[in-house]
Length: 457
Image (tube, rainbow, N blue to C red):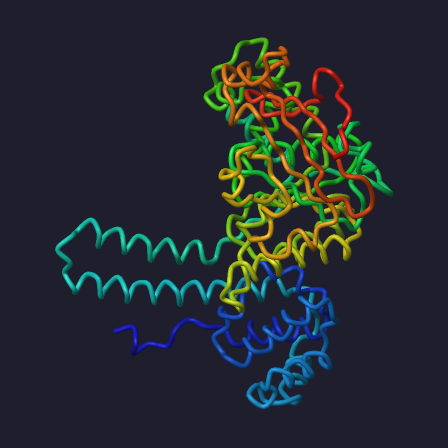
């Protein structure tokens, strides 16, 4: 039945998208999160769009001349109809102002085609009459879910927007406070003493094993930066913006994060929550929680936010959740591409990019459990690309108080909730270790009680 009908498509919208890009290459920033080459119905339009993406990825200008050259490089110029077709595209689009509208039309048609394809596959499942009814339904649901997730992409929203929703449930657009030149202060004097602040154009990698607190520390650094007047963007690939906002609110109000989520707080705590919402809503913090996105999309969104809000710092949580290009077929090589791209983004926007990273299981096999640079080597070229590599180590996660006392009969205090931040690589200065106090219930790091100075190895 479906094969007899022409699938949804809008050739004029496709041509308008490509024509707009040939007129104004920067307009790609507005649509790169909306459509992909596979969303084009006509192959030659997909080829042209792919050429634009390739130029964008290399940081080159997008115009009729460069796209022609790129298509020649890909041996596709004749397939699209030569330079005459590109001239035709330019002549049919008077302005690039409406490129988002054209892209949405292309996206809608592509979604309808995917829906038709999914319907055909679901029909096959039904005709096969599988004995396992639940398995058949699950397979059908997965096909429909893939249609939705294949076209959803969320944009940056301010922390204020998320917190406003929290208040409405009884449970925040923000203008930048000022332009910040030079390094971004971390809010931890001992860390700034080593790094001299988070430096522009630097890629800083914060790595640890799961559940040690790397995401918490990254967000703490972001909040501290915004309190000093910086504008910060967070790509949260692991947590939703609502989850992230609740963690920030728990930290600021000092209300137990678990009870905050459940709404089990006292009147005094409720007042602290409301006061914290007010103060946090004034911060220039923007969150993008699109779960599946690649480096091109991240780069595009970051550049747009930078143009609109004068971005000062970027946090990516976390690197291993970024989608690779798929060209290499090797995840280690893909992580290498990702780390190089993040370093390129830091240099392009001249701001610090703080990338959270998982560590390999080698840490667990080591008697001391202390992370070291070799633990990054299975993760591509992160160590090579990063200007700063920091690890979080917590002795209390591996050693009980009883074991500690047996090993330290001299009475050395048990490091309960004490985290060591190990600066294992610092391209511009010294390395060393600082100590912070981790307050788990309010998901926050603070300076260690005894103002311990860092110790150089």
